[in-house]
Length: 458
Image 1: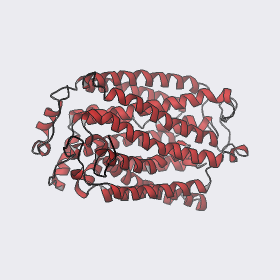
Image 2: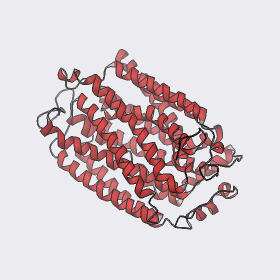
Image 3: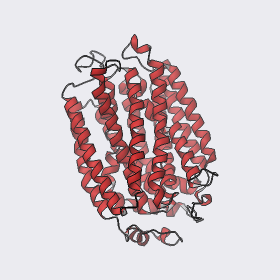
Image 4: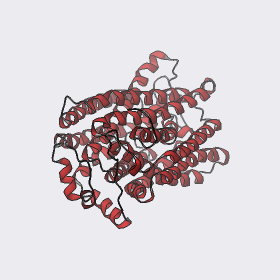
């Protein structure tokens, strides 16, 4: 698996991973710090709602945009929307006006839908089937370095500030660093090549040349809402970012001061990197059939996720709110600082576990989608559908936060969604079989008419 030239699957995966590190990764770092580093959580909530509502729509058509216009310049433009969003918080700090922040949030929602569709197409369709777990791990590791780096920057910037002000917002130099890194991410997009030029190690192409029109793309997007496998994954898609509102604004924000939130950001994303690296061995394990790997992964996810939410419930019994304008957090002892080791170790370990569960859920969803087919065009649409439904759930969750729904109620909703998801995921895993892709071929006239390397899913 050597990185020898740009048209190789690994090279393209590494490039899209670094783009994701420098753009969505920086956005994640800014979000995980709590209220996007701003002291005004209401504006941050409104911005997140705008992002995810827009992403819900753009994700559905994101795959078609990539298929029709190509991957390079669409991803380049999408990356610039991340830089615009980070810059908007500089404007907010200087002017107090949130208009630019809201407008940039809508633009980011459009760009993110396209970028994530491209990312899904690259990581799921370019590698061979016995490499998909490894490639997901490569992507997830590099991508989450973005959150780690961003958290490191915020931690370093705020380390001494927090000795004076335990709830200080992020200074403007932090936002400037984010804008610079996200602009570099946009430039990396210029190294992406069309999927027709990507050659796998076995000599096959990631996608054969084909003429796809706008009408065909529209029809294929519509078919997603009638697709059995896409609908089975809907609960997992919907819930896979739903918990971010609670974890970032209801746990990390209320319990910790800013420098510790920055430290937690590093811990959260490093935990994700480690979790996906470990689970990738199960995804690609040739000792088990794909069906058995799917079932084992689903069981592991269900057990660990329920354990995490159970521990979170115990912590939630100790407080009802974080820092408010009129009063401090009611968590016993006030905001936790990382130097208060006896107080900090338990909550920080739990926040790390939240990162592990997040990584397992999202990597498993990508692996299941990758099991369905190798068709790059189809997988770009599946990736867009996944991100769209994920964003729909996130938009609703951020609205719950904006409405100041009690934190315990948010926790119960998240825990309930998890257990609603599990039966559908288990059914999907149990039905991975040799006739899986053949069923899709019959339903997809476009895919069926193109010679492809179809796979045995047994």
